[in-house]
Image (cartoon, rainbow, N blue to C red; front, top):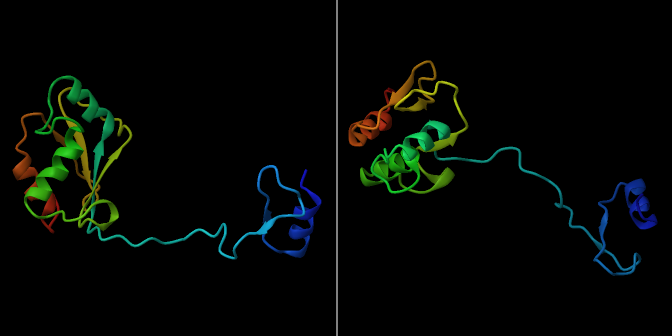
Length: 146
């Protein structure tokens, strides 16, 4: 049940007051006008995204296929390779290309990692542990797709 101060605020259409723990109900601070408002759109510099299956990547890491990086699997190795080639400059949404680890894609190859380029969602790739990351990174960075 709401306190009388909060019930009054809801009835008048004001943002509810914020009461500090252990304070008197009358000694409340009004919430700012923007309190509780969430952005609907967030800008990104990505030209496209690469989706990497997290489960496949972890399985390959357990088998000893580190894809050139000590930890992190294929996604981290691709980020490092693309950064070395100068394709990805920045981190997160400010990068030119997004590499995202996603939950299981339900393909589960024996000795590979499933990768999806969002420019060609109808063609999924299976990347083996012996794949050349330099060629793969160049191919993924090209504007023409995979």
